[in-house]
Image 1: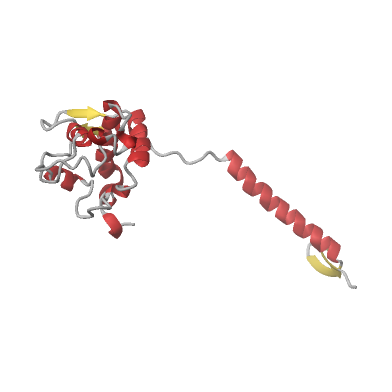
Image 2 (image 1 turned 180 degrees about the horizontal axis):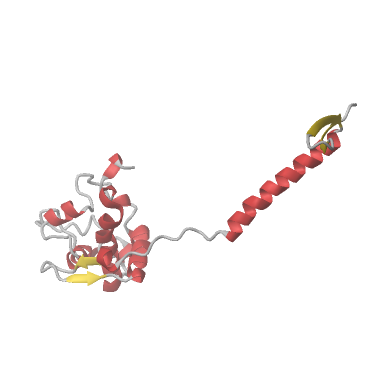
Length: 191
């Protein structure tokens, strides 16, 4: 069996030459060394480079309307994080990305929330809805269909939520259009 080997050497006059010998064991060793160097480079990159960290939301972005009189409330980063966790565990089954699976016409986008009766585009309006949900026109209660604290016997995930947690969920919902724009409540055209 013939062996193949590659060798680069200098001729002494400043020029180089490349010779090929047949030696597969040296070729395998070179291949292993190259893969080892690639692996070391990849893993050192993973260890030495810190993970990407999302930019911190500024005060202007975190400021939302508290009530119908447009009094402002500034959410803390902890409230936003807690609101996201609670939204994901409690609401996202039906309201993924701000859409409504049961009625895609009415989403959680600011325009739809502002046109509801009573208005739900404020933190207090959304908390009120989470206590006592009504139809879009405000005529009838839909507590038996929509999770709420009024129907916590039917929807146990709402049973232990405090008003502070409901404010965190509401704040998260109202903040999303500022963070991700039209994709929040936009439906299938964006996802």
